[in-house]
Image 1 (cartoon, rainbow, N blue to C red):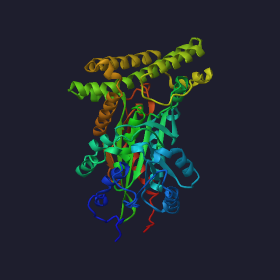
Image 2: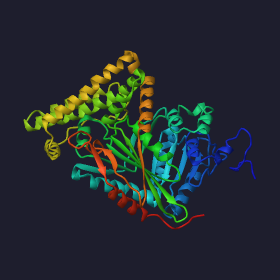
Image 3: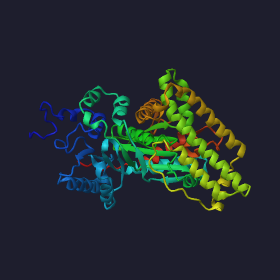
Image 4: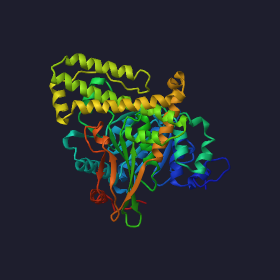
Length: 475
């Protein structure tokens, strides 16, 4: 057998890693432990290649992968995943290349400077679309929530190597991680094409006025393989990458019975990123340093929410009282920019003034009450005050220090990961799936505290997804 064979065991090479679990292999591919010169195929559904300016065969390798996916995508009950190490360096070129193909795909860019492509299986696509639509239909929100489908979300990633080494505890991976110093700091600006997104219909209007990106309040990430690690890494990347400005992320992990080629189980992983969940975490901590770290993230989110409800309240009062609408919109935009002066969010759009009648119609559809909006704003202010007390642990300069902010965000995502809710749905076993109401409402105009999807709804979703599993086998 040649020296480049995956079963090679020469000392000092990464060949032995191939015999580790797929759990290991995905993280090793992303963080550069696997050398693409030795591994064209590192597992049944995962490939890894590396981009460099002096790599003449890069585009031919990418083309080969896409042609294979195009031929077999509809015949597989698993996703085909390609990790392009250093692919983030040519993100636009790869996206353009993909858009010319006929394959169905999603991607994550920026994690360890990789461009990670998932070629979607039919069950994956069905789970994202049908489950998302079913959840929205059964939520009771009706036309006040937009199913935004899948569109590119901009991310700012950092510390992902340390985060993954902490939350995905595996001694082999952690041991190898210590030897890959060069790859530890390779996170940065990136993008994600989620599987499914949704938000209340008023949200784009407020963001339009603020000149802020419309980050969906609810996102779904789906994966289909033997392991959940990729789905969870995608969820973590979204939450951290958007600066925690999402309310909930639902990971869906599909697993097929290899003997029958039928859907065996559907894992549901709920990441609650709401202000309420963060405040529960804050209250559970005793250590002053940890409380201060959580406060840095919680305060920013509470302030962001306070600005949102105040903007709604001001717009409502202005329109009802025939005030100076254009001047108010300009003031809302200025307030947002003052607030974001020291924030790490990158994508600020030019603020705009939407049609006044459109604003009136949209806000009236929600039946916002001034007293309730003021009360919600006061709730966020109380949280901000609590956070300010805890932040006394740090000095003024520490609060603005990028390293301290990164530590706070990394600590928060690790805690949210540990508090995630995981359940398994099968044809015989289901239980209530609970999401925070703000996943679809953003603010508290909806009185209920949680969205409950019953076992009957989940069983129906499971049945609908199972119809898309193929009985074909590809050797």
